[in-house]
Length: 259
Image (cartoon, one colour):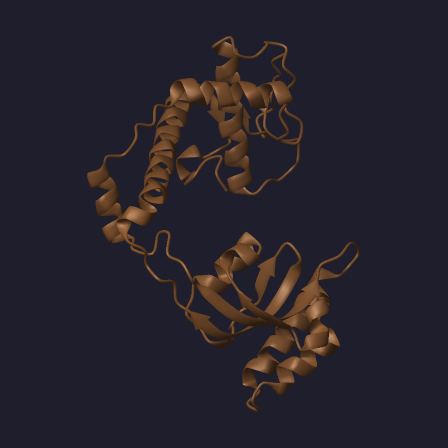
């Protein structure tokens, strides 16, 4: 059932994307808008009942989720990339499918748990980070601090995590640790779903590039994914152009629906 949105509420064709007075981060608001565009298009295509409930707090019905998946399968055509395109991409990105990348880590975890004062926790973590970056005594200060402060069981071992690959880490932790080339105590706190980490990189082992024949399918998958994202962006632009979009800047969406 359609609803009438007030002027201060972002909406798609009158369907509100948030509660009155609620402030959402721009990326979250754009994501909700994109999903609502697709949900309404699924209704127009007869893939979803007209009485499908309006999403609450950005949560769509199970039927709407399935209908959107079906809509995208019908609307987005993703051809297989040619071998020539795959070879060009591999030449430009030789680390795709590379093997053997590892880092030897120690960390001190300040866990974010219910009821904890995050501001004070961050201040304590940042103070310790500065203290350890200024220490110059062979690394014993880090081990002692881990035993005293870390909320991870590794604290008993001086924060030692050993050799880790990207797959061993939470994705957001891996991005922070593996994207750089720093050795030593990292200059910033690393944020993860578990809390705040003071991280020391003791050693890095670089990935070993693999020949094209071994990673052909991985390269093709990457190119298919990029093509799908481009097709999705274009499709959403068409839907937005035909809709009443109020209170959202959809042009700023870099990778809609994909976080």
